[in-house]
Image (cartoon, rainbow, N blue to C red):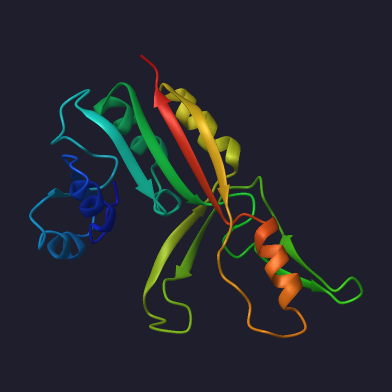
Length: 202
């Protein structure tokens, strides 16, 4: 779901999976369709009328659910089309550490420590974000913040239980300098990505 140009769709197809890619952008789907190994559809992720009930084994949503307003609709449709015990995989910007316009890195000069600053967390929010910071300032997207409990409640409401949770850190490494060690340590302590595996209950 929200497959974009189809990178992951193609990779799964290479491994022998029968793949359906869905994205709301017709431009991105046109690019994706250059590869014929995947069935593609232009559609929002909460409207999968072209898929029959309980026909899908696995669904993957990578770094896009936080940009979708109707999350409950997406999870409801995922539940409808997944087979019993089918799996939903979600990768998010970590909602506890990456809050649009409400989180940032800070520097404690006395302790020589880089820290993660949060100005809010439990309040849901909607923010317009520049897609390519420093480039093409006219290209924006909408990003929603929802606390972690929001996702667990939505999944439970639509018949899923979370079977796995992983917190992923950045692999970026700082350039040599007086703050390098502290910056690298902070990146390994504060996960900026969250992975959830949810299973549809039989």
